[in-house]
Image (cartoon, rainbow, N blue to C red; front, side):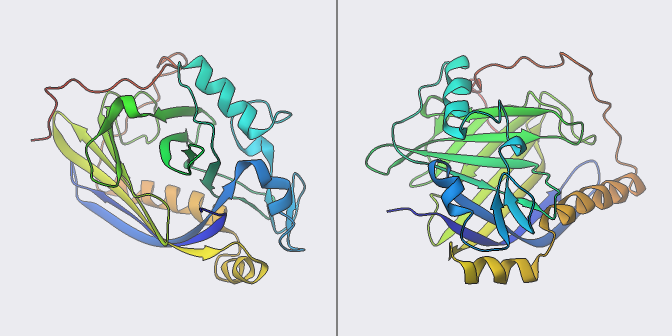
Amino acid sequence: MMESGIYTGTLRHRRFHPARHEFTYPLFMVFLDVDRLPELMKVSPLAAYNRRNWVSYQERDHFGDPAKTLRERLARDAHQKGVVIPEGRIFLLTHLRYLGYNFNPVSFFYCYDREDRLQMIMAEVKNTFGETENYWLTPRIEQPANDNKKYRFLKTFHVSPFMKLGQEYEWTFTPPGARLITQSVSYEDRREIFDSTLTLERREWSRAELHRALIRFPWMTAKVITAIHWQALQLRRKRVPVVRHPGAGHFERATVQPLGASWRAE
């Protein structure tokens, strides 16, 4: 049976066009049962739920009304997009808040049925403009991928100032276990222009493991936002064109739409 834990490893980004650019950096993320968040954050005197500490989970760091539970917000968002959530447990793979600061480029919600079978994934994507979009990755858009979960769909949310809207995403997830891998590939005009790969290994959710991670990464989310701006500077130096924010109302918040049957990368 899947349990809450800590995942440590690396994030790699590779850009293939219009300029080559690649980097890899180490990180850790937490994998938490959304129905046990207050209890789980009692794991250490350095951790807290909805209040400041070295590390904390705060409801306001995720979408929706922070006065409601995360499961309630997930159910509401899913209903608005015509999605039915399975009745099993839901785990959140995310960055927590460190020393009062939080920024999550993407958090993943792994939704299981009553038999602990992974049925769907929701990706909560944020940009540096303070906007959020939730992509519900359901069996309706799932592609054959052996034991993995694989989805192809259209990008509808502005994230990077160096990536256009209207690109095609291909995302692949291994089921969370001793290892966890997620890969996102972006296509433009059926050409692969970018990929990111998160490769993680599981540790138990315990005081000792959390303290070990905090010693290695004392301010994880500050490192994330610093890396985003540093890499943006490198792209500017390589003369990668900037894509301006399209402004309010630039996308429609709707159920993720699958690509046509004729789609293929060339």
